[in-house]
Length: 615
Image (cartoon, rainbow, N blue to C red; front, side, top):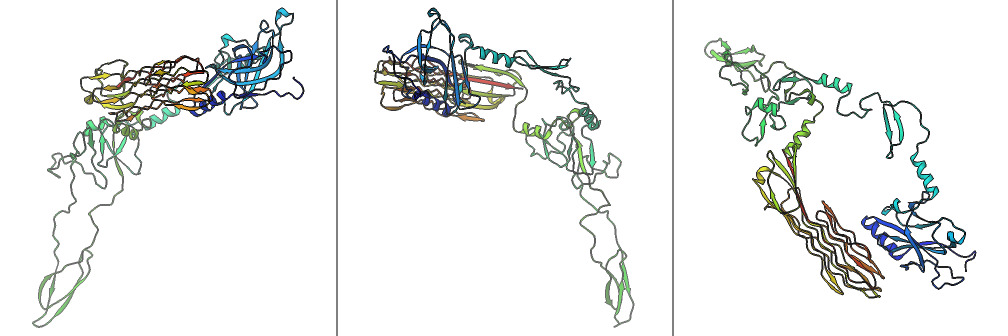
């Protein structure tokens, strides 16, 4: 009996809680699609008891209508609350509404509620109305619940339509003429303005006035190879310090063509050249036949030298036999005085050494630089150091062509190809079948593993004239007949000649029947062997998710995804098979509810080989 003490509430069922936990843990979407209503009075009592929602419910007590939802949204006040709404038209009814249930895309009851009894009349009874049934229920997270409704099969309330129109129609706008306007996805004007710059108009393939002035200021008419001394430790755009370092020909083709191998020492490596060394050196004009510095080759180095010369200095000693006379002599080039005693004769005098480590004139220290490239537009726009690093790290050139193989064949490089990026993935595994069940049994198989993945960047020389390509097929679906069946098949290996190989994933096992009072995890597919041959990455596939059976509830395992494909979804009791998608994705498992026939598994996705060719 309903009175002032009656309680009305909504809860998630055990199946709903398990599915939400699985969606939160795996980050997969959970789609709630239908609402059912019932009178909770299967025996036709005049005053039936108030139904009390139970988490163990898998169906309503006496459901008389189940239709798609009209609206599913998050409560704007409490983000942990989901609001589900359904409209019952005036020509349906003639029954009481005492219980409400929500069903997901697999047909499972995931939430249940009771409500104050409400009789929904028919027009033929002389009183008809369009009735809105709304359920609010709390979830731990709304992040993975898909708020998606098919507008083609539902009715809309007037309040919903009014709100939708208000969202579309713009509010008051200022009338005027605009050179740039913004519209929404319905083509309705949102706002307009009148930018005064090219950037404001969204034009990006040009330069601003300031950028053009800066380029003109930095532009230089000096030819490549010009040497300039700069009095600061700053290298202007377009120049390199003349420091004897090794540079890449591909980065500085103009300078490489100008210098050639004139300053190479033989250890530069292929594709490189060496700059001359100017640090700590004076520059001297080439003799070029004049005869002042004869025999010198241009660009050659010369050691320091002092021109040959003589210094003469003597002291005379006067005195007779047996007489010692001391003489003090001051050297003319600022040497230290030397005092000797001698009776007679002439003797040369030696002064102490003086001066530094080299002979030099007065000078100003500068950084000698060489013009490295011609185009003025490069100055300040291209980061040459970063460009050189990219070339040295063997990065790509211009994209020439893409060849994709989804079946066995022969890869023949496109003319002009210098490098090729190869990506291959093995076939995804199939999922196992699931056993037939009795009224006290369920069954759910796991998902198949994804194929292994390899990626490499190779040269035309590595490839040669051609390479055979073998594409691994997706693993076959597991079978099921009664209580017997097979697991999902292993995916085939994808290979490019003897260069790269990517094995397929392993299939999930056949799922036997499990008592509804038991708990079980059904084995999913394991990854195959790790791929080989890739110089960028070699990796094994991902494992599938196990099948789950808990208290008469089932959740089939999802297939594993990879870099180029997605795994199939675990299929509910009444859901369609879900094979792997894309390339190399594992198949989703299948579920069998109580007292249902056996179901076969799904097939994995085929592998692929992709060749990105660069000039």
